[in-house]
Length: 239
Image 1 (cartoon, rainbow, N blue to C red):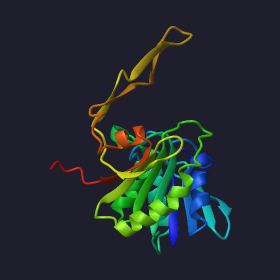
Image 2: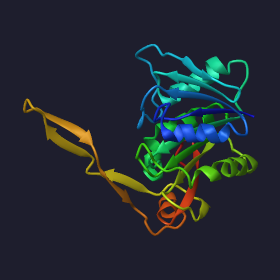
Image 3: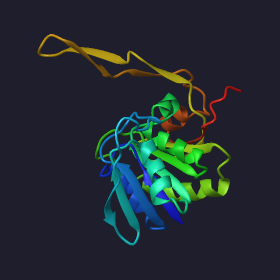
């Protein structure tokens, strides 16, 4: 099996290192990752400057490339340059430091990469842990990664569907298939004044779950100690 791995936290983050080290025990892994943090990039692509692609590590079980592009660029570079004469069997994105559940999926660079893989008919899975700390503890999620991947490969990937996986912090009670909770962010912009008396602004915000009692949502699963697996489609047509 040939696995393509990317993320939006950049190569060197603990999440992608954990994912790479886990998957290279069962397959050859090619990592194409941003050279720094690209969180919140969603499906952004680079159109205003040339992109770079540099091989920084080569071993029998992994090849690691870095680029100045976005997570979506990483997949496009991999498909069109590295895999131009073949195709990866699987795309994994993450493990993201922070939740990509509920409405956060639309902002997620982690899932943006999966959407490009999905567009290219590559089975694609995004992994996230609800912990933004750079030294987040992935030890409870790591043993479940390969079983989850195998389960989803057996389940199959319908056309235009990928999987968005989120895990809470700490011991895990199990795994649930879920839908994204209806939600939004409010009070999102904080205003500050710089040393010259000029205002500047930073994102913050309060997350609002519209249906906290709905037991079929990712937010309910996470709040109750379960890994949430949400099938996610790139078909944005309103039904």
